[in-house]
Image 1 (cartoon, rainbow, N blue to C red):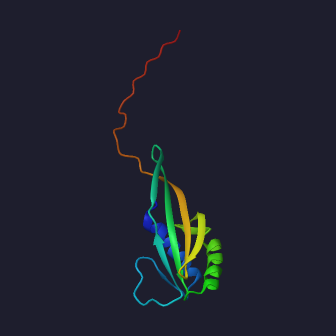
Image 2 (tube, rainbow, N blue to C red):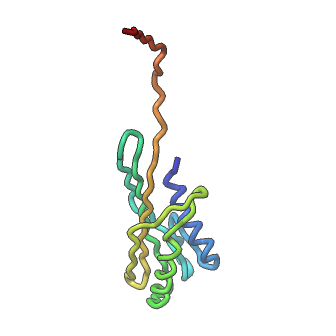
Length: 139
């Protein structure tokens, strides 16, 4: 089953692999960080029941990109992130990014993306039928 940290780790790994010279923070940013860098912030995760043991899970991310208030570099990075975050690999499977948007606030790029997928819960252990007696007659 997919856990929340798997999705977050896949997003961070995708960014870190593509931009090996740029630092990627995923929990907390250190004081005095060096720019350029990324900060991956996970928004609240939604878990919605569909039917029986099926759920839809939505993971939303705000990827911050810091680059010394350089708006041109931020827009260039947004363009790259649209392609990069479209499909990411998690446990050998591809998941598609949805609802991608970006904006620059106070010189920092905020790139938003959401990953939705189905989750199937394990069946709860229960009593199984022991015996079945059936009668039938011919006419």
